[in-house]
Each structure stands twice: as structure tokens, then as C-alpha cells.
Image (cartoon, rainbow, N blue to C red):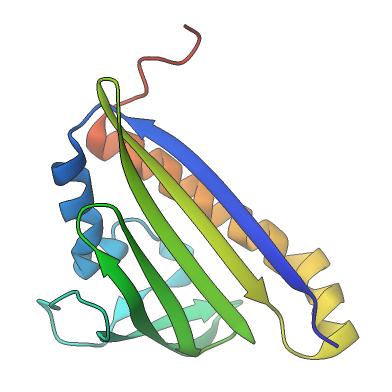
Length: 158
């Protein structure tokens, strides 16, 4: 029996929607947003034309072990959202929805990931011991890089 988990993040950036979407729609920028300890590499030749149906191959290292990962861009709706789904990789299920919306003075970025870990009860333990913290660290890093690239949320605390 598999257990489904999710992680959701939201971040405001003080930049226009079209600029922010264009950055995320460039698959090469995924390397910029991924922590170095994963040793992330895009294997698909760049530039990659993003559209529904696009396939992208990556390689990452988890605990030093190389993992190949293939995603399908399932949905691509400029400039509002796109969805990538893992076809091959370390998860039993990985579905990442990226949403972008205009907000006063900038853009709100929303990430929603649904995932399942293989290996039944062993997968549940691995998630508790490793995967949950790993995903939190990846999205924390991503948040900091996005702020570095697009500027801080100047509306916090208002």
C-alpha cells in the first residue's frame, strides 16, 4: 500500500508575471534552483521547447547514488501554470504543479507537489527519516534562490 504525500509552497516576488513565468519556463533554470548537494544535471539538450508533451531527462544524486529522472510536461498554460509528472525516477508518483498569478506589485508563485514513495512500509520509514527533510531543504533553497534572483518580498509584515 502506498501513501500519498504533498508539499505546498507559496512565494511573492516583486517582478511582473511574464518575467517570472519566462524564467520558470526555461528548463535550464532548474539547475539554478536546485541545491548543489543533489548534483543536478539536465541530460536533454538545451534549449528545451516547453509545451504540453515535452520530455525532459535529468540526473540527480540522492545520498551519493545517481538517479535518472524523466519528466513529462503534462500541462503548459502560458503564463499561468505548468505541470510536470515523473515518468521514471526515484518516486512511485511525482506530480509538480507550478502556478503563477499577478498580485499587487508583483507575482505570486505557488508550488504543489503530490508524491508517493515506493517500497510500502519501508518507503514510509524512508520518508520520515530522509525524504521529507530532503524535500523541505530543496524547497527552502529554492525559496532563497528565487528571492536572490527576483528580490525580496517587500510586503511581508504589512
